[in-house]
Length: 304
Image (tube, rainbow, N blue to C red; front, side):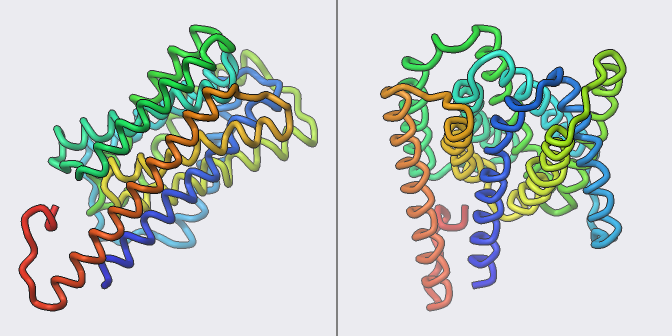
């Protein structure tokens, strides 16, 4: 029962991450700053927030992080952050976030290859449906954005998928360290651009960047690190597909930027895939716990 509770908590943590990160497209569109400046200042705020959290709630002294996964997870998350902000400035928010969500496919393949987390059949089915939904979305939406922004968004998806796998490798350590390190790298990369393109500070822009640093990326980083200790990388990426569906909704409400009919159909397919995969996985976990508590030996498939 404890394992089931941990997995459920992990799923909700990843879902919370998605909701918070889904507001990025809107705030990026509203901030009239250079994308490298936005990312750099957001990381400055996030580093301060994460350090305060670390002081208030220090990690266990027994939690040790292998250096290669730690730096790899941090590097790929930093690359994802910069690519995502740049893509949002060069193409539509809907294009940027949907193209990013080739991430579940990369997470499934890399997770299988690097940490032997073989996806279950419902994960593969969800990936096929996600790919179909993305294809529909792109047929309708790619023409509305610039090619360079779309290409950068595709790379963003690879970086996010790779990050989730390396973060998963830190499940027995403290994955939050990788998130803190990634924002520290973001500050280092962003400072030269902040000097070259000093932002105009207004009350709305300060509120927006504080929200982005503390909640949209800072708190989201902690939730994602917490979730990846309890949920397989491929499953986490499937749950996180909630982000691309919410992102254009916020942008539409405030700016009126709308996806077309094919994009909406693709979104429905993706939602269906995510919900079905999560429910099937949850049912398997419940069956596994029930069989184990009744003394019925679990099969190798159930142990995975």
